[in-house]
Length: 97
Image 1: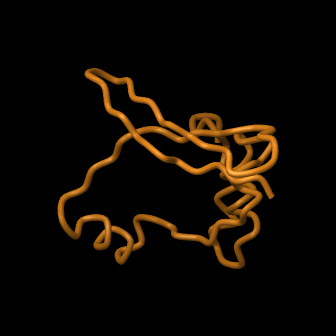
Image 2: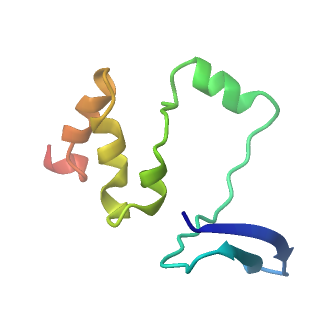
C-alpha cells in the first residue's frame, strides 16, 4: 500500500495554507484532502456526543479513498446496525418530503 506522510503544515495569512508531503514508497494514484475548521469549548463536543447530538461510527480504510465521496455519508450510515440506517431514506431537500 502506498503511504503519504505529512511532514509539514504551514499556515499563511487568510484562508490559505499548504502541506508538505512525502511519498514513502510506490506511486501515488490519488489524494483527497479534507480541510476546514470547527471549534468547541472545553468538553462541549464530548457533551454533545453523550446527549446523542452526534453519531460516532467506525470508519473503514476504503472510506478515505471512496471513488464517490458525495455518496459516502449514506454508504457509511447504511452499514450501521441501528436506526441511523433510516436517515439515508430522508430526502436531500426536506421541503419535498
